[in-house]
Amino acid sequence: MTGFVARRLLLSIPTLFIMLTAIFVLVRLVPGDAASVILGDQASAAALAALREKLGLDQPIQVQYLAFIGKILTGDLGQSLSSGRNVIHEVLLVLPSTIELTVAAIVIGLAFGLPLGVAAALARNGWVDYVARIVSLVGLSFPAFVSGILMLIVFAIQLGWFPVLGNTSGSGDLAERLRALALPALNLGIIMTAYVMRVTRAAMLGVLTEDYIRTARAKGVSPGQLVATHALRNSLIPIITVVGLYFGTLIGNSVLTEIIFNRPGLGKLIIGALNARDYTLLQGLMIIFAICVIIVNTLTDLAYGLVDPRVKYT
Amino acid sequence: MSAVSDTTVAARPGGLWLAFSQNRLAWIGLVLLALIIGVALCAPWLAPRDPLEQDIVARLQPPSAEFWLGTDSFGRDVLSRLIYGARVSLFVGFLAILIAMLVGTAIGVAAGYIGGIFDQIVMGVLDVLLAFPTLLLGLMIAAMLGASLENLIVAIAVTEIAPFARVARAPTITLRQRDFVEASRSYGCGPFRIMTRHILPNMLSDVVVMSSLWLASAIRTEASLSFIGLGVPPPAATWGGMIREGFENILDAWWLAVFPSLAILATVFALNLLGDALRDAADPRSR
Image (cartoon, rainbow over all chains, first blue to last red; front, side, top):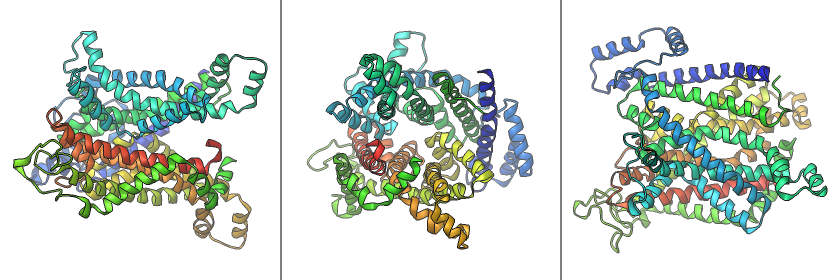
C-alpha cells in the first residue's frame, strides 16, 4: 500500500509542472502584457516600465519561467497588487469558508444522490426511474448562479426563512452559521445530488446485469444485502471517478454560489481580484486551484485502491 | 473493444435515427430547442419593442399587459431583451463549440494516430485541462483577453477542446489497426490522407453525438461569464448580463432575474435531453 501511494504521488509531479507551465503561458498571452492590463490604457510609459521591472517582465522569458517556478516551489505566490498582502495569506483567510461550503455540498450530494441512484436503477424504466431521470437532468441543467438566484428569491426574500446576506462576520454562534450555510450548501448540494444520482444509476445498471449478481440472487441473498455488498460496492469505482472529476465543477459552482449568497470565500476573492485588475492575486489563485485539483485527483486514484484491492499501480 | 461497436452502430445513420426517434424525451428536447432557435432567428419580428430603447418613466415596471415580463432599471422591455438575448447565447455557444470541435478533433485524431510519446504528452496536457474547473479557465482567459464577443467565444472554445480531443482519440486508436486503414497505408496513402479520408469519417458521429451535451455546457459557461461581467459588454442584451442586472435589483424587482434564468434553464435542459438521447441511441448498452 505504501508503494502504491508513493508511486501515485510521484505521478502527480509532472502533472503539476504541466499545469504551472500552462498558467505561465496563459498569463503571458495577454495582448500587450500584464503591466498594461493592470494599469489600463491611460498609463504613462514610465509607470509601465516601472511595473514591468517590479513584476520581472523585463527579463528574458526563460529567466521569467525559472523565477516563476522557483518562487512557487518555495511557497511564495507574490503580493496582492490591491491589498499589498501576501497571496497565500489572502487565501488562507477565506479558505475555511469555501471548504465548509464544498464539504457540506459533497455530504448533501452523496447522502441523497447515492440512494436515489440505486432506487432509480432498481426500478429501471418504471415511473420512479423516469421521474428521477428527468428531475436529475433538470438539476444538471442549472448554472449554479441561476439556481442560487431562484432559491434566494423564493426562500430568503419571499418566504424570509433564511438571511439574504449570508454569514457576514463569521460570528461564533453555531445556529447562526448553519442558517447562513443552509441555502448556499443546498444550492451546490442539489446540483451535485443530480450528478451523483445519474452516475450511480448508470454504474448500478452496468453491475446489475453481471453474472455474479444473478448467482447471488439465485443463492438467496436478500435484496438489501445484494445492493449493499454486491452491487453498490462494485459500482463505487466509476462513482468515485466521476465525483473526483466533478470537483472542478464544484469549485466553479462554489465561486458563483459565493457571489449570489454574498459569502466570503475564494469566489469573492476571485471576483475582487478581477475587478481590481489584481493580476498577481488572480495568478496565485489559479496556482492554488491547480494544486487543489491535483490533490483531489490523487486522492481519487488512491480511493480506488481502498475500494478495489485489485487496483495496483505499475 | 466497445469503441469499435459504438463506431459501427453510430456510423449507420438510419439505426441512429431510429433509436433516437423512439425516445420521447428526445422529442421534447428537439421541439424545445427548435422553438428557442426559432425565437432567436425571428427576433426582429417577435420582439414587441427595441431591446435597447430606454424609457426612464417606465423603469422597474412589474409584468403587465403592456410589458408582459416587466421592464428593467433603464425602462427597457424585458421580453424584447430576452428574445434578443437568445441570439447571443446561441451564437456564442454554437461558434465556440464549432471551434472546439475542429481543434479538439484534430488534436485527438493526431494524438491517437501518431501515438507514442506525442500522444502521451498531448493527453497529459489535455487531462490537466479536463480536470481544471471549466468556469475558472474560461474566467481566466476572458479576464486576460478583456471582455468582448470574440474573446468570450475563444475562452469558451478553449474550455471545450479537451473533451472533444478525448472522444476523438479513443476510436482513432482502434480504427488505426483496422484492415482498411492498413490497406490504404499499403497503397501508399500518407498519414494526413489516412487521418482525414479514412479515420475522420468513421469517427465523426462519436464526436457529433457528444457535441450537443457540450453545447449545453458552453451555453452555461457563457451565461456564467456574462453574469460575472466578462461577457458581451452592455448595453447588448445577454441572458447572463440580464441576470447580473436583475441581481442588483433583486430586492425590488424579482422579474428581472427570474425570466432570463428560466430561459437559460430551458435552453440547457433542451440540449441535455437531446444530447442524452443521441448518446443513448449511439450506445445501445446505456439504453
